[in-house]
Length: 294
Image (cartoon, rainbow, N blue to C red; front, side):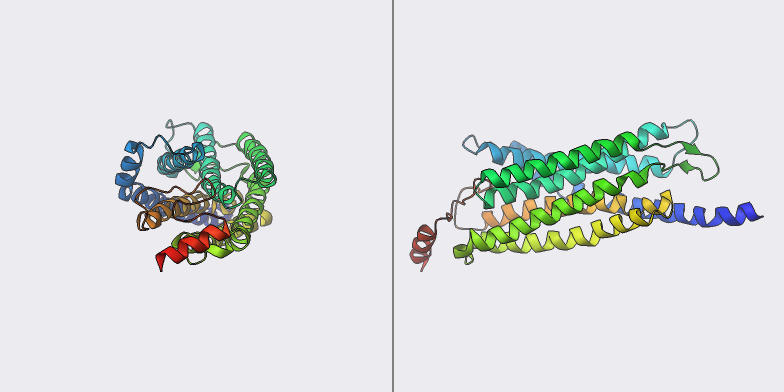
């Protein structure tokens, strides 16, 4: 009787974890299907003169979308494991790998904006490279350390080693806060004469929105991992983080391109070179462009 009483809270936590992961997996699939037409047009678009960084941003966006789909498939498989089905150890490895890659892709899209705003300053690029090397090292460590076996009592895959995600999560939180600080400060310093343009407002609003998302998702993840209540509670916000942040980053990518489409320029501006085709970052040229529009 005591064993059953001790097992009941764990079963409730497992059920809550399954429900939450399935809800966010559904959000992932809805997001993918509802925007698949945009992705197809993006793939078919051919612009030879676009800079290399623009191509990198485009393929990072596409990779982020694909990883979300793979992660959603893994969630559905892991939520209802069966004896003799997919190996829990392999499944969790794939799940964690796609989790980490999805979050990193979303932050990479943010890093490209930061680099462009700072006109690819060598110091900023060096800082970005250092941050990503640290995050990549922690991510590899986490993927290697996590383990999983099938638990017949709970009828679910175990989540051993999820607590090792603490340091990668802290590193990712610091990285996102640093990127967003550079983004917002860069807009105020480098683009202070361009506030009247739609591009500036879009970047500023999206930076604040991503800051809100990162705080809303990453802080609870770090908090639960720090408390280390049990493996189930440690995993409670892992799936929301891996889905909400990529969804937010990819939506901002599409929104920024849509804002550019709505400008007076007939060409597509992908915002990667540090200057747009409707304005440049040189204050004098910004003033001249504003005078022409009056």
